[in-house]
Amino acid sequence: MSDTYEQLVAALRAVVAQTGDPMPVVAFALQAIEQENLARRRRMQEVPGPYAPNPMSIYAERLP
Image 1: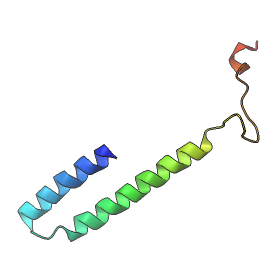
Image 2 (image 1 turned 60 degrees about the vertical axis):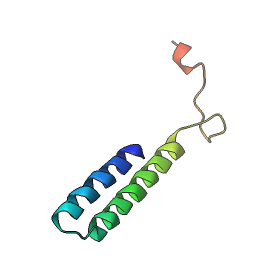
Image 3 (image 1 turned 60 degrees about the horizontal axis):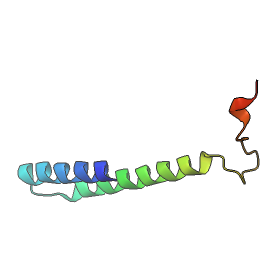
Image 4 (image 1 turned 90 degrees about the vertical axis):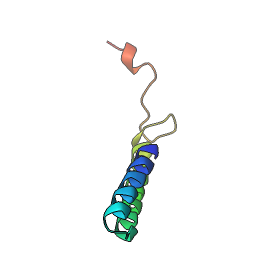
């Protein structure tokens, strides 16, 4: 999230310096943050764990 935060601050500074109306940039940045959080949640769901329906064996790498 720090990367998104830095992008938001940089974009707000640029827009305020040019137009004085930061609302479109804020809306866009909030959408980007929501998409980043959604993508992070999806990645977390895809990782198989020991209690997943088809868990990977901890010995799978050792099998010939």
